[in-house]
Length: 219
Image (cartoon, rainbow, N blue to C red; front, side):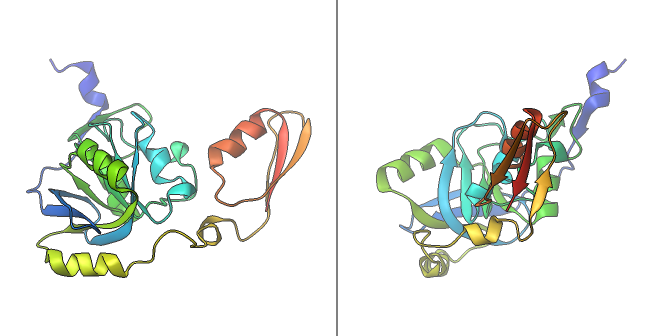
């Protein structure tokens, strides 16, 4: 007799893993396996130390244009669902993981992390020593990088990385802010009316205001 938990567990399809690399602008290369959408992604390499909340990280507007490395070693074990998104869709340029488990289990899960990344067009890599990567970034400073799937000419990839614009001075808010005014109604009676300027506001922040009786107008 199978354990009751089996009915709640989803197993991702097993395929031969394609090779992938994470390369930094200083020439440092981290090897791993392809994950998520196929291709090559460029951006500023940053890290996040959260143990959970990877879907919130992926959809956080403040990570626009960045390759986000998760230092916690196991990411993806509870799948993803639309309720946990911080904006309408993914914002990261790429995703870097140490290990993504083949099984996910959560009563709210709607699909696996790999399926979500593929559907969202996010290029990712697993098998990276993300803590070694974090120490490297911490000691050398922020830098541009790339996640590339398949066979890679490292000299050519580094040249393309160095052609990417530095994050300093880029107007990233224009790409993530709302184009149209909208209102988030208060839950229950309206106690306050709040005006919020969207420079990359997170959905959860608006939800918390709404739950406290605030009618929020977002511009």
